[in-house]
Image 1 (tube, helix red, strand yellow):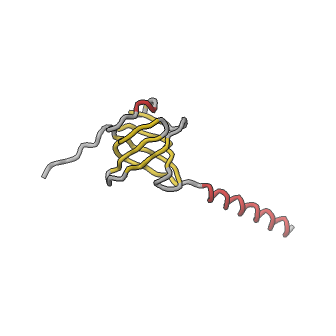
Image 2 (tube, helix red, strand yellow):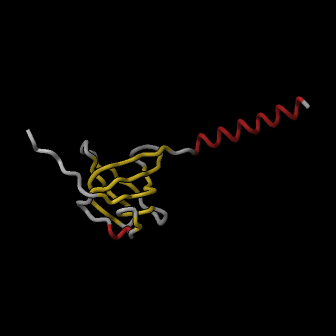
Length: 108
């Protein structure tokens, strides 16, 4: 019985280790589209960094909570991108929301 418990524990730990190795982090990028290609979207965030984000057939693109085609993405649009990846340099878009442009205040 003790050997069986040890074996089950070892298998469970192995499965958990595999899960952690293959896990990706979630990222949210908010900014302006600078370039659109068939499988890639470049977004300039508020801090000035350009994020290259991969697109695939499963990427959900929407405007006003209604699905639209990826062909609706254009340079100059404001977007919120929920993505997954190992780092900010390796992102795959899960959802791209086209949002109204954010007005900046010039009041003194």
